[in-house]
Image (cartoon, rainbow, N blue to C red; front, side, top):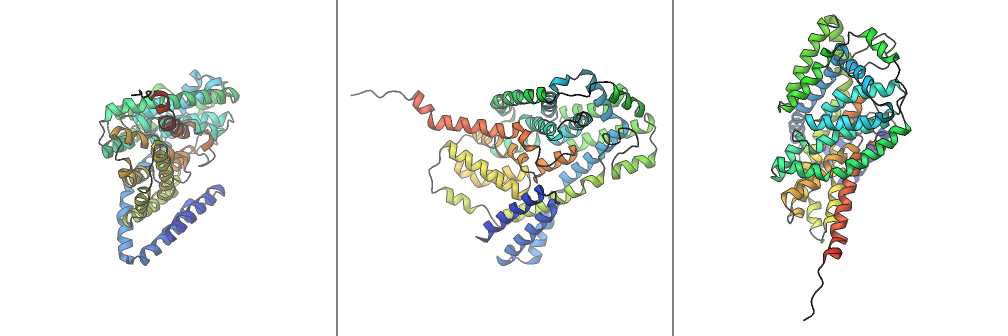
Length: 447
C-alpha cells in the first residue's frame, strides 16, 4: 500500500513541477528518499542502499557522456558555422508553406539513417528551431514535429539502439523485423503527414526574405565545407560506428573549422564549450545554446532516475502485478492496454525509455507466452518505445526538449507520431478481438 502511495505522490510531485516550471530533480530526490525509507523498513541497511545507488549511478555514465558530448557538439557546431550553414542552405530550398511538414519528414529520414533520436534532434532539429524562432512560429508545434520525426527512426531504424536491444531481448532477427515494423508504421506516418500538412498551411513560414541569410553571412564565413561535421555523423552512423565515437570525431572536425575558417580564438572556444555559444550580433537571441553547464540539471535527473530504477528492480516492486494478471483471461486489446499503461507508469517513475520497455517486458513476459517473438516485439515497438517520449520528465522527452530549448510538456499535443502509433495498434487489436472472427468465421454445416 505504501509503495502505491509513494508512486502516486511521485507522479503528483513531477506533474506539479512540470506545470510550475520547478526543477524536476527536487521531486525525484524526495521520491528516492521515500523509497529508501521503504528499503530500510524491508531490512535493507543504509550501506546496502548506498551500494545499490552507486552501482545504478554508474549505469547512467554512458548516457551522461553522450549528453555532455551533445552539449559540446551544439556549441561547437554553432561556433564553427555548421548549424548556421544548415539554416542558410535550408532557407534557400525550403517551401515556406510546408515548413512544419518539412520538419517531420527531414527528421524522420535523418533518424532512420543514423538511428538516434538525440543525434537527430541535435544535428537537424536545432537549425529547424532557429528558422522557426526567427519566423515567430509556435516553437512547441515545430518541436512536436521534430520529435515525432526523431522517434520515427528510433522505432524502426536498423541502427537504433532501442530497436537492437528490443530484438535482442525478444530473440527476433533484426532486418526481417525492421521490414515488419516499418510496414506497421505506414498508417501512423500518413496520418502525421496529413496533420503536419494542415499545420503547415495554417502556420506558414513568414521569414523567407534575405534578412536572416544576410545576417548569417555577416557573422559566419559560410561555405559548403561547414556541413562536413554533420555529414560525418550521418556517414559514420551508416557505417555502424557508435554514436559516442561519431560525435567525438565530428566535434574534433568542428573545432578545426572554428579555429581555421571562423578564426575563433582558443579562449572563446573553451568558454563556448563550458557555457554555451553566444554572440553580440543581431542574431544573439536566435544563434545561441549548447555548453556543458546547460546539461548538468538533466544529468542529475538521469542519475536519480537510474537509482530509482535500480531500487524498483532490486526490491521487485512491480512483480506482484504479474501474479495478479494471471487471475484474468486477457485478449489482444486488454494485454496491449496493460502494456501501454505499465510502460507509461514505469517511464514516469523510472524516467527512462530503456527501463520502461525492459522492465515492462520482464513483468509481462509470461502474459505474452502465447505470442510469437515478432508479435511481442511489435507490442513494445508500438508502446513503451514511443510513449516514453510523452512523459515530460522522462529522459526520452527531457533531453530532446532541453536540446531544442522548448517546453518539456507543451510540445506533447503536437508530437502526433508518439501517440498515433499506439492508437493505430490499439485499433488493430480491437479489430482482431471483436471484428475479425465475425467477418471470417465459416458457417457451421448442419449434420
